[in-house]
Image (cartoon, rainbow, N blue to C red; front, side, top):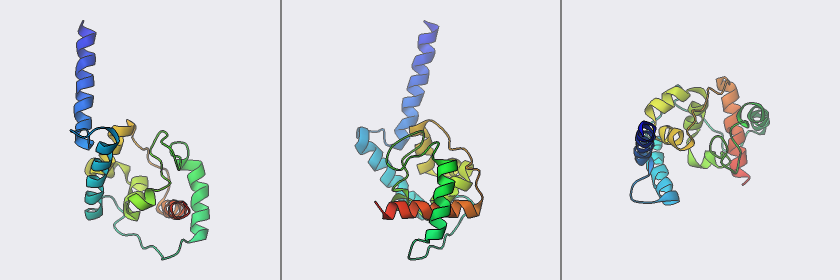
Length: 155
């Protein structure tokens, strides 16, 4: 009987914690989209982490993108796929959904993002796993960003 109560309390706590990321009256996919839209508005206004501004050329830098693809395949692909949910979210269109600063800060400054950014916290609640430090430096993160930009543009 005691185990059932503990299980019930844990389940209730989990359900309540998910409520902050779109678990309200809307259901399922619509709730997730509404939460993501609200979180995207916040992300557009605030920049958390050490990367405050990323200068992007009008055209994809193919040399950066090639280096980024190699890094992605070694470091990121264990948890991320382009077109499907895996350990973490699909990233094939992340460049269209997030700012360059957001993407780089998630790679380089995950702890700060989880502490301060609503979108990052919602992703943690949805995927129930924290993105580890990507073990890349700022230059490598910039290469991966350019690769993700190229992937998004070629969709």
